[in-house]
Amino acid sequence: METDTRTTLLDALRNDLGLTGTKKGCDHGQCGACTVLADGRRINSCLTLACMHDGEEIVTIEGLGAPGRLSALQRAFIHHDGFQCGYCTPGQICSASAMLGEIEAGWPSSVTADVAGRPDLTAQEVSERMSGNLCRCSAYPNIIEAILDVAKAKGS
Amino acid sequence: MNPFVYARASSLAEAARLGLDKGTFVAGGTNLLDLMKLEVVAPERLIDISRLDFGGIEERPDGGLRIGAMVRNSDLAADGLVRERYPVLAKALLAGASGQIRNMASTGGNLLQRTRCYYFYDTAMPCNKRAPGSGCQAIGGINRSHAIFGGSEHCIATHPSDMAVALRALDAAVEIERDDGARRVVELESFYRLPKDTPHIETVLEPGELITAVLLPPPAALRQAYRKVRDRASYAFALVSVAGIVRLEGGLIESAAFAFGGVAPQPWRDETFEHILMGNKPGPDLFARATDTLVMQAAPTKDNAFKVLLLQRTTQAVLSELTGV
Ligand SMILES: Cc1cc2nc3c(=O)[nH]c(=O)nc-3n(C[C@H](O)[C@H](O)[C@H](O)COP(=O)(O)OP(=O)(O)OC[C@H]3O[C@@H](n4cnc5c(N)ncnc54)[C@H](O)[C@@H]3O)c2cc1C
Ligand code: SF4
Ligand code: FES
Ligand code: FES
Image (cartoon, rainbow over all chains, first blue to last red; front, side):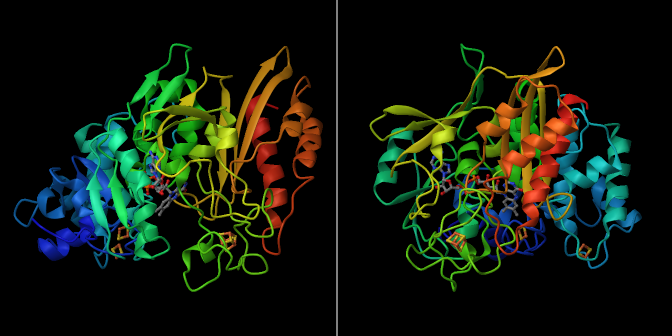
């Protein structure tokens, strides 16, 4: 694709490629609505330029699952009522999918008691690790339950 | 956003050369793009250094660590050696920003992130840092987040980095490379410049110079802590933060290295404070005496006087955590 040097990854996805699942909340890295996976890592697509990601694999909510083939996290969000308006949800789910991998890889967080040890899979850990995804509807308790459910099913 | 030319550098030398020619480096982009969108900064030419090989996290012959400039904050905080030997650094990194931002933010970019002073961000307002000579709206304006140490009559902004506070307590140094390949190493202590009458010049970096790495000396004492106080429990900048490293010997504090964030234009350190602690038996009286001295030179403003007591109490809490009394 070709686009202006100024185009953020977020605008390229939404405007140039028509993939509107990824949302624009603040456009300044403060809300997480625009979270996508770049080569498997969660990032804010609003704070990076499309041209900086030439050749990388970008996965958006559309790539994680779609009606008829929902991912485990998507099903869990529905089951636990992990949203109200749904605006933050694509970002929450993209973020959570990579976050679970970070826990599996043993990455600590600022609430991990021993920073050199392995983190436990607790609500407190999940909530700290998801703090980059705001929800104006405040569906947080259900979001955390949904994520914990999937994490426990994965046995991580 | 203003139009700009984008170039991806293919080598460190090319990056530094382009940097000399009105270029601005972009690493993770998390600070630069934020500021470009608001037109607080308007680079003519962006030089993408994110795919250059600055090296990873490597042990040095002296037992210290070399951290390449493009090592992302999340990878640094997750590194086994860092977590084991420099836990204060891992903790400070994890206390900053969010999982997504830490995945993007680089070691070099983190050191060079700009202040979060609201007037710096608001192009309708005077600000000596953004527009030299235009005045400082924070002095006499809203200055709750501003400095109590090291400010000048031209600027009282704080440096927002958590990582830099831990690095300062760890006596880190910055490795810098010029376009001709010459390298120099500057102690973090002398890397930042106080605002004085040139608040727009924040470090000793010359145009075109690249940060190539951060160097850590061999691990200090293992009693290390980082405590950050902020307006919400996560994903917010520090009002006050404290990085502390202490060694106890025979019930006495043998050595103490402390750096403070959220209170000054650069990570703040106070030798007198550390000397009061050293050689003495830890306890509430000693902690109170030391933290009284720590704030003796504080120059709070209208809205941030609370930082004086907050700094004392946070420091006492860290001292108590580190010494077990
Ligand atoms: C919502 C939000 C919350 C945040 N919260 C925190 C927080 O709580 N604590 C905290 O510490 N930080 C926080 N940050 C800031 C974040 O840590 C920084 O934006 C990040 O570390 C900058 O790194 P970068 O690689 O993205 O830098 P960039 O934005 O790419 O660059 C920043 C500056 O450094 C220069 N530069 C970059 N690399 C080099 C190099 N190698 N040599 C020379 N110059 C270079 C660039 O030219 C630019 O001027 C937050 C940011 C956001 C958006
Ligand atoms: S404190 Fe510094 S950054 Fe803030 S308005 Fe004053 S000059 Fe600008
Ligand atoms: S839109 Fe990217 S973080 Fe809010
Ligand atoms: S569901 Fe409405 S913002 Fe999260």
